[in-house]
Image (cartoon, helix red, strand yellow):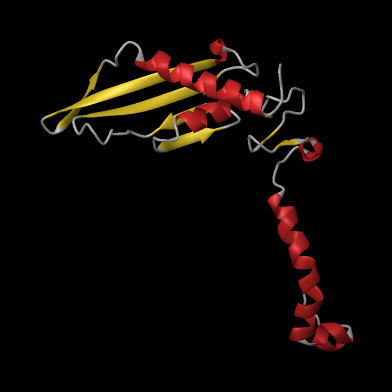
Length: 173
């Protein structure tokens, strides 16, 4: 490619300052279009659930995320487990993994929780919770069994919070 001679450019393009001024109005449009990524164009017209902070699914109900999990269960799990540090949370896949949490009252044990939202419906079988516990023995953390009611108590709290969110949002599905 041969360079373009400055004399062949229009008058506005000969000055670097004028070129910058000519390009400035286009930059925000380019920046915003780059943010669109691989979004589904239909998702831009979907209503937004302002209480849950998630988009409603394109295929239907008020309590679905686009990825196919129940938004109330998702938000209920986030709210219930918020006292623990999150290692990861995938709203599309419906998976929440916490990092190890050591209760302030106990220096010799720690807990980790995995919560899975399995369905679009707000049902108890759409939620699976796994709780892991370790005790410190010497300088090592050793896996130990969790009390029998711990997992069911956390599951019950998540379900109760999800139902409360649905009721607060005015949906009686």
